[in-house]
Length: 208
Image 1 (cartoon, helix red, strand yellow):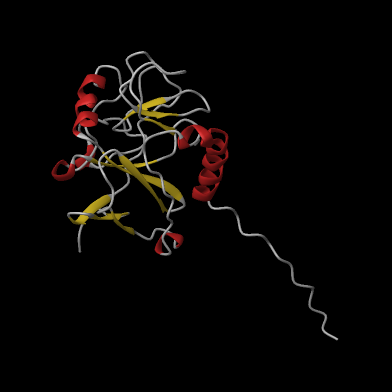
Image 2 (cartoon, rainbow, N blue to C red):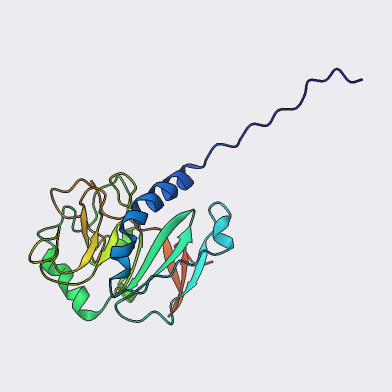
């Protein structure tokens, strides 16, 4: 008979990105009904490649119409891709004086150089917004609030954007946080690059 001690199983620690996603999912559950009422089309389509840590995710946005939103997974986080209308882009200038960091100069969540602008996007495809859909306050998931004008918990001059129901932070259609809100920073912009007119690679920002 062997004298070797019985084997033990030590559970693997939960990856921090997964903890963030679980927290975001918990907050989103309470506000899911509100999100369904928005005019955006939200479809969560995780890629097999995204399941591998750090894997870049290739996304085809050819079917994404102006005013629609697509959600994919990258590193266990929801990434929002929004094709903004000309009217939505025009509304960003009106919000410049009301957002806390209009050109994304803060460094808590470093923004790629190509997105440090009013639209927070690559200027050759400035209508396409790519942001991580997790509030920078405590990791909750904001909901779409695209309708303009007075609404509960929103200012009378609301021009469309996103609202975090957990603690009341608001973001415009470039993911920029408004002043005097709990969230300390704009929504994070992940590295991304256009492989073609309608094909994105999220997780890398330089073509091979």
